[in-house]
Length: 152
Length: 292
Picture (cartoon, rainbow over the protein chains, first blue to last red):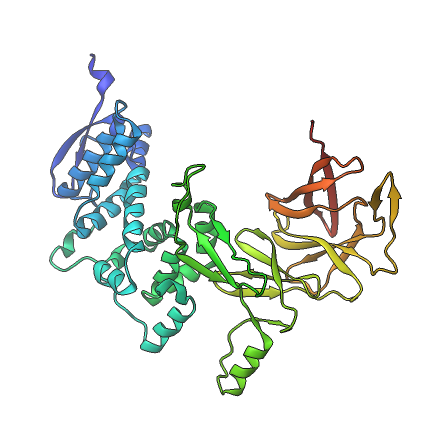
């Protein structure tokens, strides 16, 4: 196998750790793909907004989804396990996926967040997502009264 | 910057850019969205934005709205089956499902409203006024998530409503009490970005022209009227096809589709498209003959 078949890129996290990835996997991130196509690739590629812990996770996801030997259901099984992470990590992953323009990862993460939310009450959403309630008691009552069936 | 600087304190979803929060909300079901409106004012604001509704609608798959029918009473209840539940059912399988999303058509009889008013409850719920005695409401069809309701006592399309937000627009009443609606349909014209309601009117009994050809009855003086939502009147656009009109047309992508029976008793599928050019409305009726 000649070296040109498996082109590699070096990605550098915000805390200066370097990761070697296959170019074919990395271009799932449109931000990286654009750099490659515009021939602006420096060696290594600095990713100022992503730290090493999160970058490692992104790369894990990226490589799994780039594998052509895996079926869609196997990838889905991987996704299900992948998202079983503490909330803070999920938020950081969302930010990273957004920064890298990694559509597939973004979809999986947003879908996961939404699915979790479906089963929660309003109070649980606030608590788990750490959202400040800025409604007064009356305002909240009025808001709930618009669609009482949702709160039964 | 990432959240790396805030490792010490707990991260909040509100730290995410608004666009990302919106993306997450797009994946929610209707029940989830309605619930999220009550989480905080920022989310209520995000969800109430018409762009959000547009994107969520474009993003979501079709669900099924079930209306229980009871001969004795009007049913306000509409049960909405979310698409994720529907995709699980296989053909021929018998399932017990509990639809989570219960919507209501915004109608209440006038007497109930009057009582509420007398009791000092001046905050009246937004509802359609209906005659208490003859209030049978049926649904014409749905278009882009809106429903058009038809009031049988006056034999007319009455209202276009959004059953999730309970907002509605009243349609202008029929001018002539003699006239009755034979068929109506509710659709959206993409060219002008307007919602339109179509109805085929039959003049009163004394004026209704009828002719018989080979045992089939024709009605040559039925007229078609159209109403653009937001305007004040119905507009006569010409005579209706003289054979039996389209029963219960369904709106799909700019056209009404329904079945029509022709002279020989054959069932044809007709395709009525709404196209607007300047101030004129052209009504095309294309008949697609089924090959037996």
